[in-house]
Image (cartoon, rainbow, N blue to C red; front, side, top):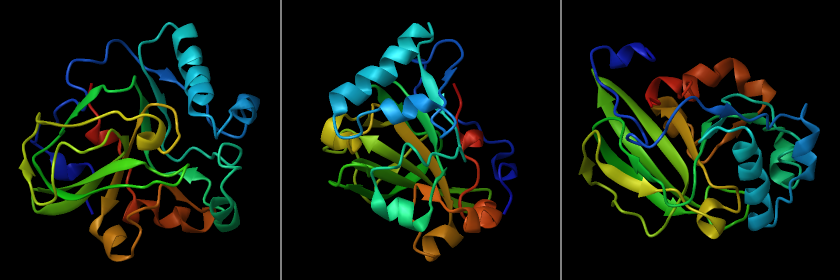
Length: 219
């Protein structure tokens, strides 16, 4: 694999167009932050208000939650995650208000769309398939507004609007944001399509399956 070298010479369109202003506020969603224990994970309004209250208090317009951050306390309400010890975040969370539009960072084919209805999951999601310089990889976007703007098999171009930020059921109960994640063909073949977190046992293979998404995020 050659990430991000596969994008050499290829322009990446900003995921939110010209919406993001200034630098992001960096959230600490790790277990080192006692505030994560105060979040009401089953009350969207309360959860969302706390997160955006912290953002507004920081005097930043938008925020991020980090890739490969350990989040055991934030995931305490989800027994399957706890049992499998999948505490390490595989995506980049970009925290912006409900209904903010997203634009495709690269030319793509819509590989999969759907909506997970269980609280704590992705809610509305879209997976885009990219073939750049003969390297195939996939970008996943979770917590999106439904019904979706695009359909499986549709070809979209860099800079084309393809989604909006969701809330409540569309966000899987999480605060308003998008979870941006990269999956390799190896990850798709291994059935890891719906994994948003990884266990310590699989961390040595994280680049094989879930490379850093930072190279695909421009603002």
